[in-house]
Image 1 (cartoon, one colour):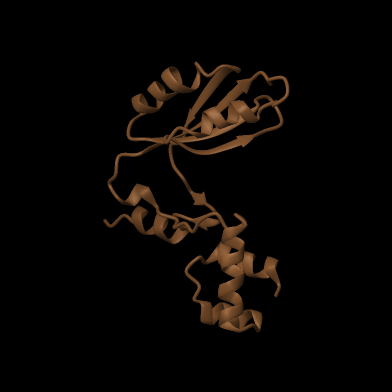
Image 2: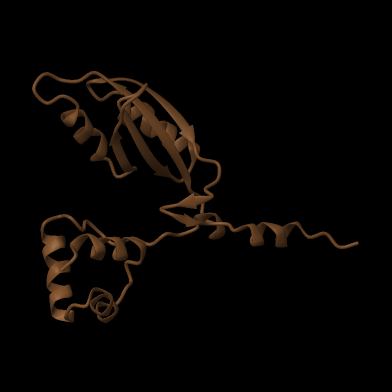
Amino acid sequence: METLRLLNIIEKNARAEITDLAAILNETEKDVADKLTDLETANIICGYHTVINWDKTNTERVNAIIEVKAIPERETGYDNIASHIYKYPEVETCYLMSGSCEFMVIVKGKTMQEVANFVGRKLAPIQGVAGTTTHFMLKCYKFEGVVLESEEEKNERMLITP
């Protein structure tokens, strides 16, 4: 079975039916189901997610990207610091980066103050963290390859009648 092809298909549509996957891959449903189970067990498939345009839900939600400067530790480098960062439930994503900062952390909260408190009380005091820079996301246009607001929707809202 073409594992990479299967992964590419379900990455774009996690709701694809086993019957459809089997037909696309020219495999049996049992083989596809077994392969998905194997990929989940091997932690290659780590979850199935839905892209939601939260701006259209009237839900108070603040997203922030936080650049974290850090000093590597002897023996573990940045791994130990990363584990202290990503254990917090506020942290959605944590990347080790090249460039001007060591980590990029994506945090979600209900208010800007909640995110600021997280940075000041939990993130910044972690041993090895040398500094942070917080960027609040104002609007999301595209997420995980999905455009959240098309040009047609924008134009419809901008129509003015005399």
